[in-house]
Picture: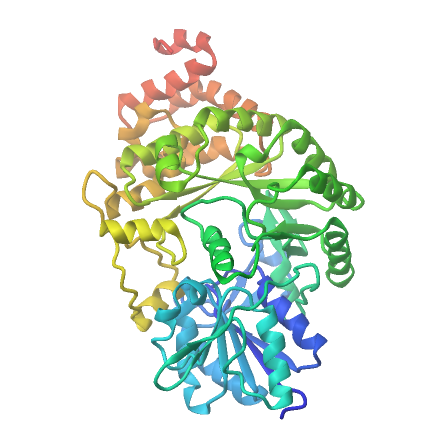
Amino acid sequence: MIENPRILLVYPNIPLMFSPPISMAIFTAICKEMNAPVDLFETTAYTDQFGGSRKIINQKKGYVGRNQLDDNDWITIQPASQAVPDFVKKVEEFNPDLILMSCVEDSFSTGIALLESIKDKNIPNIMGGVFTTFAPEEVLKYDCVHQLCHQEGESVVREAIERLRDGRPLDDIPGTTYRYEDHAQKNMPAALVDINEITPDFEFFDKKRFGRWQGGKWFNSSMQMETYRGCPYQCTYCNSPGQRAFSKDAGTGNFMRRKSADVIKAEFEYFYEEHGVDHVNFVDDSFLARPMKELEAFAKVWGEHKTPFWCNTRIENCTPEIMQMMKECGMYRITFGLESGNEGYRRDYLKRNVTNEKYLHHIDIINRSNIPYSLNVIIGMPFETKEFALDTARFARECGGHDAYNVSAWQAYHGTELRDIAVKAGFISGDFSWNLEDKTKDYNDGTFTSLIKMPKPYLQPEEIKQIVDLFPLYAYFPDEMYPEIERPENYEELMAIYQSEYYATDYQEGGQEKIERLNEARKNRKELVLNTKSNISDGYVKAWSKTCANHDPSIEDHFGVVA
């Protein structure tokens, strides 16, 4: 029996992802509620991305000069090799009775390295996260992991603390799998939690971690909030459909749950009092995918403060009424998951059966709202060709009113249907083997690579990298420019032109306002073209002038180009 069991929370984070995780804040709140001493160790600030020569990182870099900063603007970073010794030191000083670790697939190798370093201390540990839910057999290959938490951790944390306090064993906690020396025991499922009951506690995170640049503006205290757990959609690149299926198969109910407007209001006001919140990121999978009645209730309570907020949602969720309502109550930015601009590929492989025509109808609504937005794009998905990827760039160009892209190479995450498709096709191995040294190094020095290997005509690794790197140029310049874009000697010049026009004003600029300014910038290219000594071929000038003519036919006279 342990009257006040000591709980060490461990978060092996991807380096320099500074936003404090809600999961650790929720577990902190539970431990405090149950009078269990709690502490946190995380790996966010351990990285070799600066070659070991830099000791501090400034979140305001690129916006203000160093002489304008004070000590509160800097976050100390350490070499990646220091993470394990510091973790061992933390364990020896805090002397925990239980270690609770949450990690995603990207940081799993780091988590294993930490647990291996204290294996001789025999401190009970429970590892949770999406990876343990969908690949438990892979996690159980490592004997430094004692117990796995499947899906949600709130009830597991409560049960573990109560059992330590009562002197009962941990091996049959619902919602977990326990490792014995010769076998593993999967226990009965845990009931889904009421997400309205717990307000996260971010005590262990430095206030500097809440500072954020977004949309060209610095926010001193940007808070992450969860109002929606789960997602109603079937997207094959996401694990949310898998979470719903997991709950259904376990008989625990509907994984999709939403917080009431009153709870959202109370939680925000608590954060405002504790942290002086001046901006909120809603981390929900699809913020606007809720009944109109709930959106109206949210708009009413949020409109009392009108604190700027960002959210992620689907393009087709946006109607004129919703956009007007959200803008009036404080919507600051939106991110839309486009992923692919080829509607056939989207329908057949991503389970997103929405036509480009319908998307563009809703994009017009979004543009007319003038709410700034960005587009998420994935390159290198199974059975994707270069032409499909370029269709995505073309579609993004047609949208017109966005002011940023988030372009990434596809990663084969467990729990996603798209990974299963790739394994079945032989594009990736179904075996999951980690070289801890190499994999940890990859994430510590900032190198991320696509592991998919497909036969032609599907995208090759070098093509994936090229399209990710050149995507903004593909999406900005006309198709006639593509040969010039792909000539390496043109990259710097074309990127400079793109940036000078695309980012000519404040970054926070979206919708029709963005479109009108870009149209004007394109019309002004005449003088730049004629006065530039360029290494780029004549095709560049012709393509550039054609773009101008598309927006202003009178420019034809200057270039002899028919639009």
